[in-house]
Length: 330
Ligand code: 0X9
Ligand code: ZN
Image 1 (tube, rainbow, N blue to C red):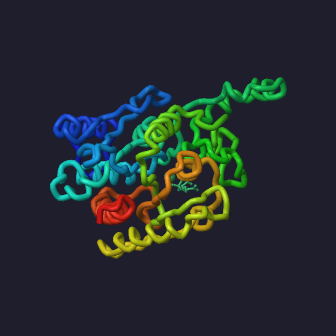
Image 2 (image 1 turned 135 degrees about the vertical axis):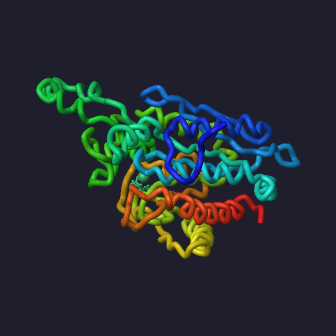
Image 3 (image 1 turned 180 degrees about the vertical axis):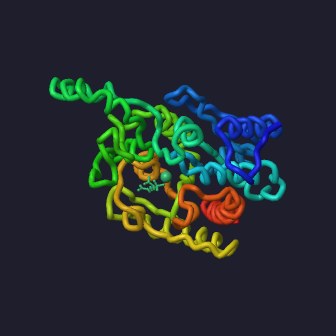
């Protein structure tokens, strides 16, 4: 059994139980995968949904969806489990889609942070690691640290979305920080966090099958196209933009919710070391997007649970539209 609903937000344990339930109840299409362990040694679990290889015996094109990279962005994880529920428990409604695509869903990429946002600080963003030891690399810093350790030691966590190894640590004008006390601390080195390393390793091992990389964040209602680290655009930008336009159109048809579409660097601010840029620049996945879910600031990160289902419905409409297009299952 499981206690999953989309009427409230759930703790990490309940989300994991639901993934385990899906794998147990639908063993032919759901595989439960532990991609690694968090800093606090929680298992990082995801599911792969697949009805098997195609007629030629080859793996189908896959859609990757992660959420919960930023601890306080609970709506993303709720939407990810909603999508898992639709694909698995209503698989007959999505038979055609599942004939043409596999799905990889990681609902909570940062379980330590996610739990801390339930138990300690509701607005926590980062992981929960402590890199105080890494600051002791020169005699000068050692001396500074000696007197400030009590303070440094309090600065926990790395922003997972600044910790990926592509143009890591380059943008330092507020978009990413090398100060451990900052909200956008990029970490002592790329992939210093076991959470980002586990995700990257799994994606690299499966990159030849992954056609689209989606990462769910909140808030501001935006469908963001690479790059984030620079104002320049990838050479296939217009293809990515035109595909995303269909998704944004499908979203607005559900409840009239508007999602702004454009490059991360323009619509937000330039930042380096984010997962989307890495997925495109290093893993070589063509269709890469960051989706900033509801709302536009009325509730912000504290989006009421009554908005889970409407948010999930509209985003699922957008995602399945673009998924059909990129996997050629129209
Ligand atoms: O800043 C972020 O990591 C994301 N926004 S959030 O408010 N959820 O923190 C946006 C990331 C967009 N992608 C890149 N800038 N590469
Ligand atoms: Zn975020």
